[in-house]
Image (cartoon, rainbow, N blue to C red; front, side):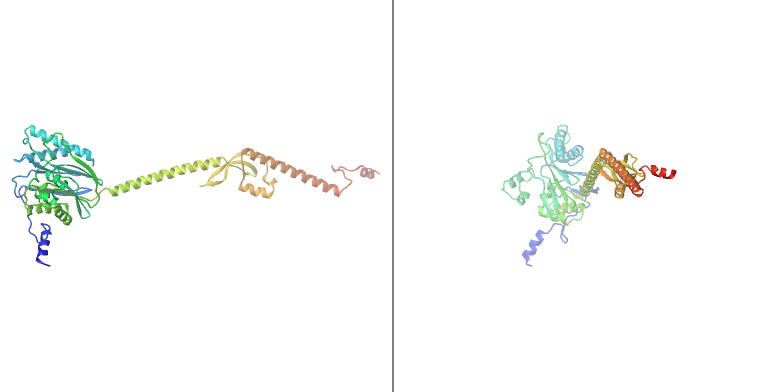
Length: 420
């Protein structure tokens, strides 16, 4: 590797890369660090006065799932008063859920509070601050923003700035007159075009976007973004294992680069975006829907079956006689699906053997009246069979004694012969 390549590699390394000198952040006067976790988020924050300023006018808010960074303006500690009023008001007015409209309204309420504070003698006239805040809830991040503090989103190793600076140099960048790198060192980089504390009609940018497990959100004052490029912010955010390490490394990089301003960094990791719970609720809802559908289907099927059963008629055996039944000759779980409606005196044994077998299985008829008609037919058939049988018997008896009367009484000749 050539000497030029070595120099280029060194210039591209993060300020706190292994083997590089870096400004320590622990134990510094005017510094503040906070870290914590919840069921869905993990966070770390560090604020430092820097290496040039005499006091820290930045304020930050951690009221999980609400986070904010406010960079004070006005000098002589008035900027710190303005940023403190802003974070206090945002904390009081912020919505309970991820609603960017209501979050924007909270920032606008903070603007009114800063103006009112100056009028009441808290701080001084002309004080103001930026405000960049977000509220993360169940895979959604609502953002409200005014000024040149920033919010970044790191996803799968790539960082994206989600806020737009309200500054003169940002307008130059937007118009293509300068590059983003040139904006960091531009002489007019401190000119803010929108901030809290100056205009009662000031409005906040607000929007929402989706976040997921593994995403890292970075809120910072311009004390970070004006000192190191986004590429280095990305490298440090990617290489830091925890949110607090990321916040410490980013502040250290800003100090190492000169620390010309107060620097505040809040880093939030999304550890549970609620997708598992959403899936559980979706599956429960789907299961409930399927269950309700099955119950409805069962009810409809049962009603159809009952209607069918109630519309069926059949003949079957009832204690040795033929009866008319309603329903079908079957049972479900031991419950018979047919019931006796009408009895008769027709003996099953008087019917042909084939009919007897059919009656055991049940002979379907179209209606109750059709059943009665069939019974009448059975009676007629039985009577006819009995009459025919009697006639056959009489004929057989007559053939065996031709002179005998049909009723079996003695003939006159026989009586006469017997009297001679």
